Length: 200
Image (tube, rainbow, N blue to C red; front, side, top):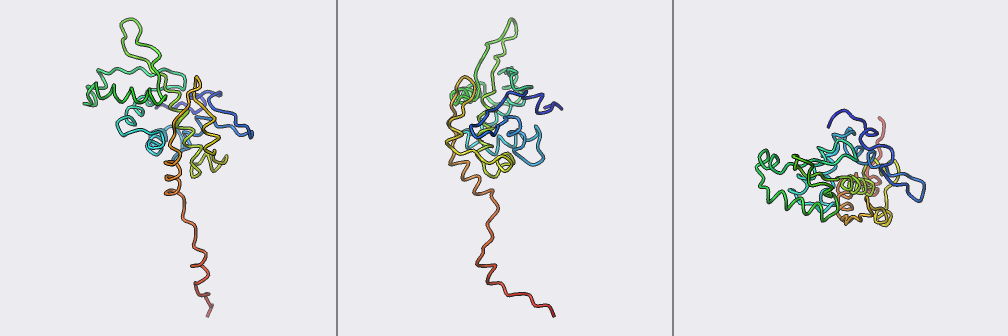
């Protein structure tokens, strides 16, 4: 993914200004999603929030491949079906099916069928970053939410991707994920029942 900083990859205008004065910066949210931070967290975030994004394993894999080739937030991804099929042994018809699902969910959009002799299609993947950032921001256990406060479902549903693209995020999946991730609350009754230690 290179050594570009978050600012270089995402620029300074990629995010939302929230009504309460907070700012949801896409790059900050996505790259803070896992242990260690930085762009190594992109695959981690995709795997963590794949169910919330309503993606099956094959669709999640293809989206990961596409984001891996997105050098900046605004750079279209060049996708060669022939090379992808040859290197992964996934049939082209299956790749197309995954791609149609990603387009139907609004995460990717074909912006060009190729130029000149280069027939690779170009895809805009910015909405995938937007949707992923919303998942991170709604997860109360994420580093972003612990720093800024989590977004409510209502706040997240008001935010859209580019061109007004609304996302069908599974907020119940985020709630279940957060419940599994959250540290267990100490049992107050158990603490009261413990005998006092007496120094001898």
